[in-house]
Image (tube, rainbow, N blue to C red; front, side):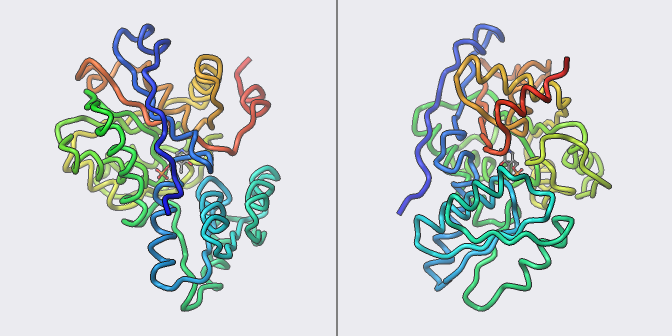
Length: 304
Ligand SMILES: *Cc1c(COP(=O)(O)O)cnc(C)c1O
């Protein structure tokens, strides 16, 4: 059973006219769970189910936890999501709406994650939010769909948190003969562990996350994402929270779709004058989505 959908590929007239080049939007925000995470997580959940898993466990209070909860409901497998006390009421409600059991444990994600690990048994599968080749295999299908639509862009623009999306998109690019297409990886100031890690040549850990783009808030990226920067033309870009929020509001006005600042970050970088984005006549933006912020949140974050 395929749990994710083949999302629309929009040629954005507003962005194309503004930037003077064709801007393609791959609308992952329209996945049933609200983000691209469903691709990789459904692949991982199905893989574990075929091998006898009877229970899925996640420790993400964001889009990854929600995607696991969605897969559990669709596959009829019980799901437990362990989140720290800091998880928003909205995120808790969305996970419970999917029928998952929500356990609130500890002050930090590390405490919640340690508790989630203590629940694992022989028949339980732990679903990681970004560092797992099974996820990357599933995320890669978004590039397969673009290639099947007959589009090979001059560059690809996406957001990076822990690097699962980046690893998956690059897997898809390689298997579709896009090895020459540069990738622009965007994060927000205060969550910029990828740019710090690429500069060091190895994963480095941020002391704290200060950005509102919480879905980009991995303290450090996975090793594989950093390794990719040595094998493929990858440009790391950092935008402000304010620019990410403004880009979310612009997408809402122009395309009538609500996304999180984590996704707005990639859209904001369209306005950066980077060589990689000028590499060809067109650019593909992965509109990765996210359900964790409301219109009221975006308006409250908008700088006055
Ligand atoms: C998870 C997520 C990201 C970051 O993805 P990584 O695989 O951690 O790099 C970006 N945007 C949204 C909306 C997400 O849910």
